[in-house]
Length: 439
Length: 104
Image 1 (tube, one colour):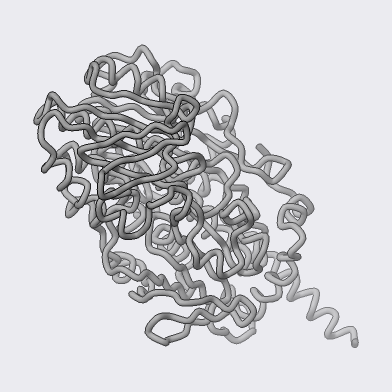
Image 2 (image 1 turned 90 degrees about the vertical axis):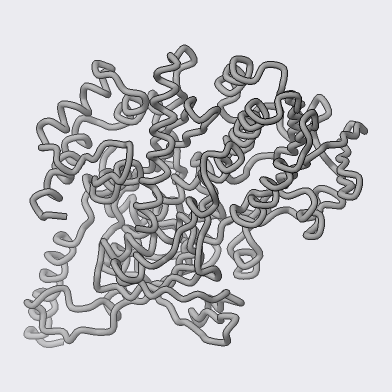
């Protein structure tokens, strides 16, 4: 694929007229490019990153790697971050939550990012001013919002904040993961684990079947008479053939999957009775019930005017600048990113492309042609891994599209040796992406 | 506007364009940055996925082309490498090799 010409670049930047305004802003605020210019150095451009997950952490780090003169501030409400990737492995007994817990020490000490532990109350896009829960304010030249996901509360009747303490979602790693683990451990042998899987689009498409796999591994080794029932709001799921093949092999007669059109869609829950009700009128009582609700961008993104009627945030897929609010880039799960799935891996890659774009915009040069990768490993058992991969490029229509003839799934006829290799790489991938994002 | 200031403006524009080209983030660097998610920042891996920071450009190019052609066994690199043109492979490999020289 060729580099973008300046004309294509201007076209891709779109109607916001970002080139001219950004070019000017860059001239006004960028430090002197070198000793040969007589212009006095001005204050460094300020970038504020909201949200310290894979997207936000990676973006803050790579902004500083690309341009150490930038003033980069990361605002995250929690002092520590528990990675969602790997959190299913907790149910299989392969990791503890401590193993998955990250801090922002390296971003601060090694990369010179200002780390602010505080909650954002509001963003005034006109004044480019962020107000924090502490009452402090932060100004920015460009803002990167990496807010993750929230749930569509109300889509499942009876599933509210209180219900999450009885029927955990565990779709944000941390206390919810610990609660679901505790419930599984307390469940007597012979019980049923029910999972309600969400409709697309949602964070980590292979996450639900991976979680089922890890629970199945736990049952097989500790509670072999137990069963698993997946009630799905979809009619198919990620890596379905590979998961199904492995389940037949490793966990025969343990797992039942009910697609939406066969009565899988959960529409109401009764937490006190540990019972779920489906659109087709069926009801199921579980020993442990895991409800993964439908998802959307978090309220802060909505309140800032970044989300559209889909509930997610449309962006210029070259720069990830919002198409609705100038000077704010939305990255990670909350963004609408063409064919990219919502994953920690894509959040990391989007963050890098966005960092490169922001640095280029400050310098008044065209952002580089982006190239994105996704790799999602899933463990079906501790020694059995499968993967899906893709490489994505910006199409002429401005949408990120998978490169044809590349990517795809682990082979259906792989040997157990290859599954074992992929299980090793899955665990290595987690260590690598954590180090690349937080280290 | 007097001729002097016009000349000064032209000079500034020239300087700006020089600075711009020097500050452009290359395609090789962009592609290499996507390798780092699995292979570690600047190609230094902390775990089971191999480091790629020590590989001379010629060998990296040969290896990636072999993955792309399906001539070298891999679990996943064939699926990745087949997405890139030979030119992109050369640029990414050269960028990775340049990191080693910089001691990153």
